[in-house]
Image (cartoon, rainbow, N blue to C red; front, side, top):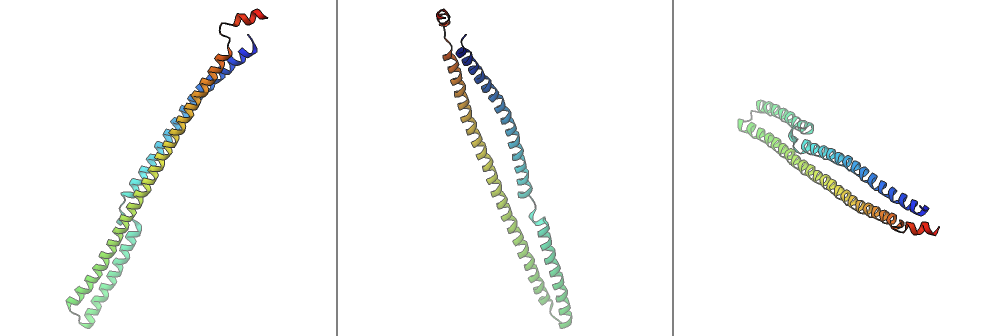
Length: 179
């Protein structure tokens, strides 16, 4: 056997080995990537559920605002009763002032509810952006995998072709007889 034949055979064997090893490494990497994407998706879904379906009227800032308005209304009602006792205001006057306080409370609750709706829209938009980003990343990865697989197959076929071209099929005796 000539050195060229041995080198061609080694070249083909190394090509086959690298192709098979690449297949297994790619498979392992793909499995890890799939697990990571599933975990990221689960984290994103839990973040979305926690933020979108939360009770916005029951968060700390909304409760603090409600408490401040209630305390202000309580003080104003006390002042209204004191004013009515001293100045002899009519009950209708006290009712009108209390109605003003209730309007303030209603406006505040409406504003908090509007903020809650805006919060939900923001969370929904962020969730949509995150999902689209994940999908775009997956599409990009799949496209890269497809190109790399095609290139790897092409390289393996080229190495195999080179190895087969280096072998003197049926002409081994001619080479030995010339020597």
